[in-house]
Image (cartoon, rainbow, N blue to C red):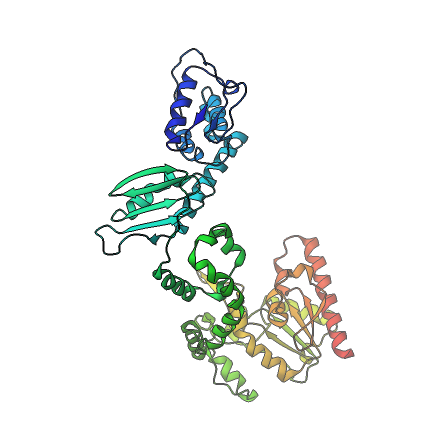
Length: 472
């Protein structure tokens, strides 16, 4: 069954409907177009019992695209799938069906070819520019037979002029508002167009060398189309010059910071301290610190205490309820437990410097109670300058970090505490940091056995930290 090159969609649809109604199976048909060689066993009358056939709309839409594909077997593939649809219309929704998947790929290829035709057809004027209807022509080499289904796009867009799109197969001719198709037109000798140089200049100026991606460009603009596109002559030179042009653009870029940087700088200035690293003024500067919102609800800032010549510094998380009210570190339940275990570990608290990573109490009010809340990363970072100044002033040999907040403030690592407990890590300046539990963890432990093991580990860590501090 030979299909014409012009009007093939209607011709195939009528033929397929007739064969299907007469119950003619796919194996009884030999499909082809005008370029297909005659089959030795083809011909003869096909007979079959007539029947009513209903075709899913989705198939009709797909077939209207697939018939324009360049695959000679497209008609046979469409009819074979249509034959299966008679008794199984649900196949149109079966993404796992191999036949449907093949047809969908062909449909997609045709649509892609139509898109390329709309993008890459380049007209040249062939008539009198002063005529009432100007006349243009173009030569295009599509991958599939997409001139006929795409011609209506050009008719709508360029309806006020005459034009011709010549191809090696079927050409489209639009004259006086009427569209027709012609087979096997020779390639015309199109004249030079002065406007093309203007277009090439525009193309060269909109080319951005800093965003050049050759693989993506050739995917969207395949090289097979370049020979019929005037701007393509400039592409090789533009690609070769792209690195140098990108460097020149970067060097010529403005040096002023963008608006968002100015905003960040202004915000930083608002929260910056006027402190000039005078240790005597450190307490006063911490008392009036507004680097984070915690100062709004806390009673007061809680400073570290201990000898400034201490070899061992112990850093907790933040003040608790009692510490916030009295202004001294480690005097609440967790602090009292710390004192008890530290004494058992051989630590004289009077010879150690104790402080917290965060200087204000963070809590949520529930009735008359103030429930402790762990500080977040922003709050820990905001308070870090004060902790660093304490470390600079004391110059400890070893620091014991009690809890995840203290460990993060000192080392910058937020790794789980359970994987770090008992390990000696280091600050950026090299000071040894021994990571251990916070005593509040021991108070919260519900399982007695867990509490005992945690207490033993905590005491062992304190003893080891004290020993390391004395050894250095």
